[in-house]
Length: 288
Image 1 (tube, rainbow, N blue to C red):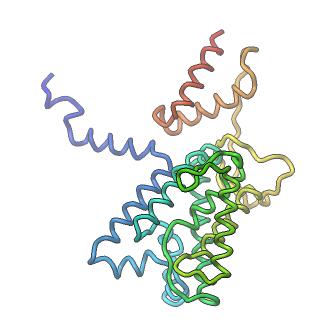
Image 2 (cartoon, one colour; image 1 turned 180 degrees about the vertical axis):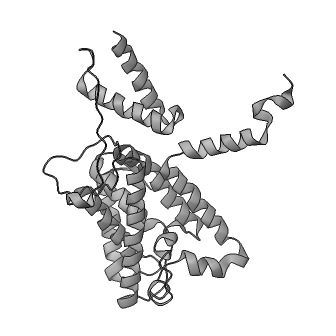
Image 3 (cartoon, rainbow, N blue to C red; image 1 turned 90 degrees about the vertical axis):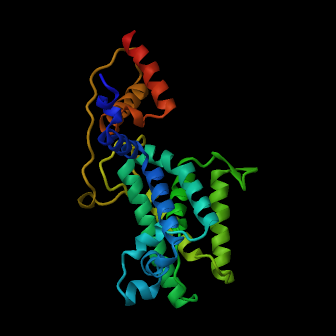
């Protein structure tokens, strides 16, 4: 067969490969890519006015000019490189774990809701009690992610400023106290109200279990936990497992079912090295 006839030499093969790469990418990392793309648009001088109108959020833009979409687009928008870097690092550190807990669609819902509440909080606060300056950045949505991660994994060690080890719950508290101090202390240049709005949304999302989609996350809501009324919740998918050999415990079987569902939904490439190792070890137990 000639080289020119091989599939990988054709343009459509490269397009399929690129499409497959995007498909298996986690939602967290897709959001990172989108945030970086918007940051690059900010660097183009001819787009400055357009970006300010459509990728920053403020009272006038939303309630006077009707640009309601900026409640979300501003949460994908960064002008400063360090602002982008830190927000994307937090999203990279905590987002994939929450996707494992909630599933991709519910994690995206958390980010979107965090962005909307954070932007609205900033618009209202800055109009009535602040300087009325428009804001941008993913910090509010990321704060929602950090708070939920801290509630699920409070004792995970995080290296604050890259060198000081602290538990995640303490880092979240430190950030919240800093934003409260900045909000009432009049510190300028930071949208503290947006951060706090996102944090409150994250707390409510976790405590009330506001998953909107029937997604096979690893953790199911505990009995007795506050939940949305039934008519507001989408039905959850039920998984029926076949009887297993006595050597396979229920917890292993449950996780195997989740991983098999993930493979059927997203492909084998979506498994992490730990998940792949677990599945291989479990398969040995199935064969015994």
